Length: 128
Image (cartoon, rainbow, N blue to C red; front, side, top):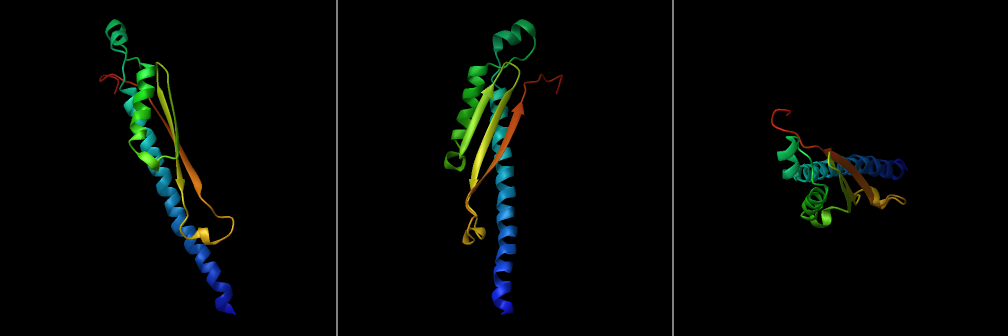
């Protein structure tokens, strides 16, 4: 009787450990993707404005395209993404879907989504 009651508890705890680790890894992976894409977008500087004012200004159209293009390189790993850009900053949100390994055997535990966002701003060498 003890084994019958204890076995599901062990599987549940193992599932929380393994699938919790998968969730943490997915969250970190989404953060890395968002940061890299935001940096790629923030590199798209409006050169005419930089020459005229000496201040780095983001070209919003090119920045958004660069950020989204970098995310497409990750392929199916990205479940969804949003890229936004202004003249001051680039913001990227990335969603990754995680399929549980152990918890999937229990009813009610299905795939879940981890989301992360990042913002990057252009800076000059003196300001960095």
